Amino acid sequence: MKNPYSTQEVEAITTEWLEKVVIGLNLCPFAAKPQRNKQIKIHVTEATSDEAIMECLVEELTLLDHAEVADLETTLVVTPNHFADFDAYNQFLDVADMLIDQFGWRGTYQIASFHPDYCFADCEPEDDSNLTNRSPFPVFHLIREASIEKALQYYGKNAEDIPEINIDRVCSLTDEERRALFPYLFRAPQHN
Image 1 (cartoon, rainbow, N blue to C red):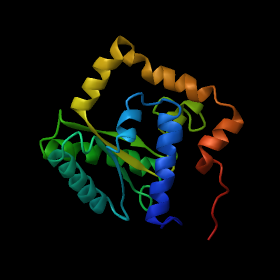
Image 2 (tube, rainbow, N blue to C red; image 1 turned 180 degrees about the vertical axis):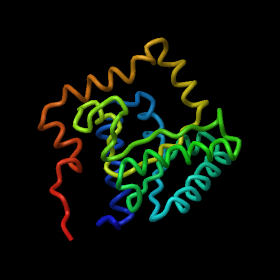
Image 3 (tube, rainbow, N blue to C red; image 1 turned 135 degrees about the vertical axis):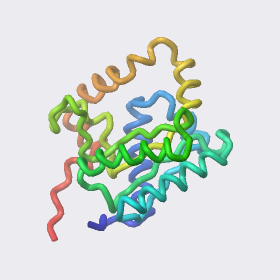
Image 4 (cartoon, rainbow, N blue to C red; image 1 turned 60 degrees about the vertical axis):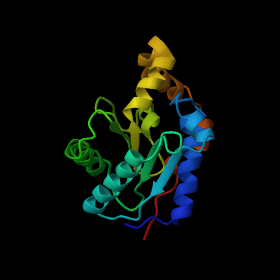
């Protein structure tokens, strides 16, 4: 099903989520600097099939591979027209991971996942902790492992506490804050 937003609107909505949720709530303590330095690319694909998404991921990982970190730190591949179903998205993550191996990028890149219906394996769908990985559209975050290692060294021994800190942070949001930060989770269903 085609989403009702233009590519530019999807990019703007994703940027707002990145700035207000990921950076604003400090869910990723390493994201603010690359965003300030314009080193985060948001690539919105119109793809509507697994095969087209695979091609897109390979293209974007290849671009990362040929770019200097100073120019391009990380990429968010946004798929607004595919993977509306979280289970299908989650299963595709295995395919994305196989691409990393197939192209020899294991240890160089990894993919983080975000989805409007994200649900951790040990959680119920309505559990507030899922908000840490809920985004307005399905997103594949292509990350340089060297950048993660560098950031973790800077963050120090407290880096292992980040996931729990993030869960505490999103679970402490008021209903009003949730509606402001995650408006896409509270929209009325679209009827055709």
